Image 1 (cartoon, rainbow, N blue to C red):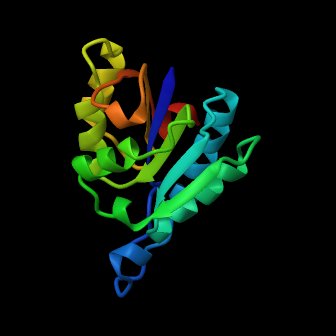
Image 2 (cartoon, helix red, strand yellow):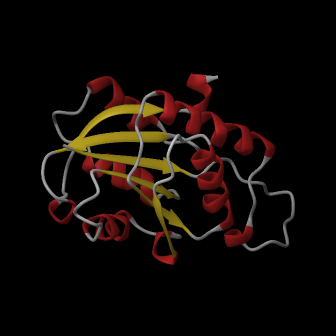
Length: 169
């Protein structure tokens, strides 16, 4: 069984209007949320073999804080292709993932991540979790999916959980 974890970057700062979108750092609230999500991943043993992370500063910082809370350090691939990516672009990246990886974590951006999560959620998904996902996929939110098969054939998966920092702390 494969596990896919889709994590939206934590809350970013808009304090410096001169910064390009790509270069925005995390806000104080985002720093706390990323640590909280990392701790929750560790507590639930939802540990990725591989993390695919957008190269934007806020996603790299989110990953750094999440990874610091994990008991093991997975392989990580920072990729420009995930910045401002559509659902189709993200899915393309997932389908190219190493077949030996059983658990992938993507740290990315909306609207692509939200769109992909909603597209992937199969009819077998947990109804309560599907409803939560459809309502909103806020910063630092995580959607967990499981499926049988290979990454190269990923088209739908069972949504098992949605987590938001406000639900945890």
